[in-house]
Length: 82
Image (cartoon, rainbow, N blue to C red):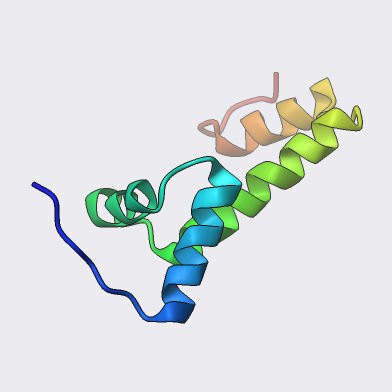
């Protein structure tokens, strides 16, 4: 079921910007917000973090095995580090 939705120009611009950066349609951005509770602000931050991660990866900056182990140990139940 399709609906027409009129947004304030500034809000429409934000939706359009997120959609363009994420390679999605404006409708998909709005549907994500409605279906999954991802606010426009959350989506803006998410897209920027993903883009920053891709930029780091393209520059050869990756987590070291020690970095990964540190994060894994942070979230494991209390026990001796691996």
